[in-house]
Image (cartoon, rainbow, N blue to C red; front, side):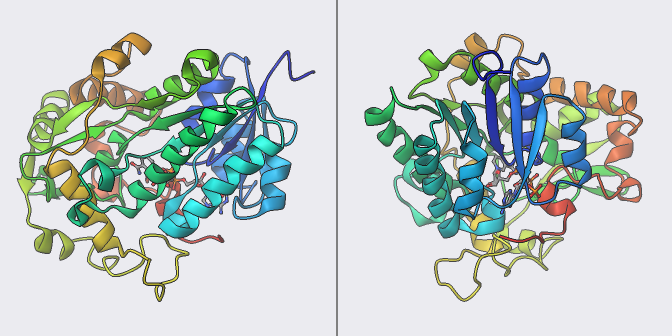
Amino acid sequence: MSSQITPTIFVIGGTGAQGMPIVQGLVADKKYKVRVLTRDATSPRAQALLALGNVSILEGSFADEDVLREGFRGCDGAYVNIDGFNTGEKTEMYWAIRSYEIAIEEGIKFYVYGNLDYALKKSGYDSKFRTGHYDGKGRIAEWVLFQNQKNRDRMGAAVFTSGPYIEMVVSPLTPMTPNIEDGVVTWRVPLGSGAVPHVSLEDCGFYVRWLFDNQERANGMDLEVAIEHITYADMAAAFQKVTGHPAQYIDTDLDTYWGGPLSGAADLPAGYNADPNDKSTMSFRDNFTGFWNVWKHDIITRDYALLDQIHPNRIRSAEQWFRREDQLGKDLGKGSLWERVQPENWRSDSPILKGSADARTGKL
Ligand SMILES: NC(=O)c1ccc[n+]([C@@H]2O[C@H](COP(=O)([O-])OP(=O)(O)OC[C@H]3O[C@@H](n4cnc5c(N)ncnc54)[C@H](OP(=O)(O)O)[C@@H]3O)[C@@H](O)[C@H]2O)c1
């Protein structure tokens, strides 16, 4: 079938937390075909994507020009989410730049860059807010949009800026995994009275599909999304309301936070294949200290009216998301949300992040 009839999108990161709903959103009605890059075509996530139909798999790493070339060649569009928790900030930036350059050379017509906020710049360049896995993407997003001023007729480009997945607040092995303390679901995080603009992964699928469906409007756009800015006091109240089980948020200073469940990882590189001896490599502690400071001090904004216009049925509150997820989990046989946050019920496929489920291993 010619690409004019069913456009094919090359997706980097398709087996990830973010990529799975994006691929689903593209192929659900068979309007697009997707070619997914993965380092392991046999993984359950790769196989689940294949089972959707209209999906093919390319095995290899984004840190390889030949693989990138093969991936982009013959495709019409691309969605590129380079995993900074594999590469570290510096290497991520290199491969993100090469991805754009090779995509244009290979004839991609529309390129969507999976982004996070350039937190350091948005804070006014205050290092207290430096977050490698945000800044590494955010710098390249600006670079992509700058290239696009010249290249927009040859290859359109859009930036898709998301944020912390709300799925992480009920998942094992994330920076905001809750503990169960005397029967109370408890989030101990260094957020003060700040708020996190969490995103819903299902809605990410909708938004990215919208970018490919509306390329003329999307060309040159930075679509910044979120559900809403959510304080963790509201998060706990919403969880309690939906599940009928008690929940609480306990504001935690940074030292106590880093002495908790993440203490073993605190001094490791944030990117598992980053060189610990390279002075550019941020530790987990430094990276996520910046991350929490960004939310605590309200650095990041969103245009919710624009999101209402683009996605009128979007998820608008933590409560709404909890309600849907509770029902979905029951329908899929995973149990209620209350059951799913109990550590004794965690299974190998419980972590929302593939990198965490894979114990932060795998080749560059
Ligand atoms: N956690 C959040 O809230 C959040 C929010 C927005 C953006 N992000 C960003 O998203 C990126 C991670 O994606 P994710 O959140 O979907 O995490 P994830 O669930 O851990 O998925 C990681 C993805 O990256 C792929 N990958 C890793 N190294 C690769 C390589 N060398 N070559 C090809 N593919 C590779 C993995 O594919 P295989 O394992 O199948 O090879 C998988 O699809 C990070 O840069 C992170 O900063 C995270």
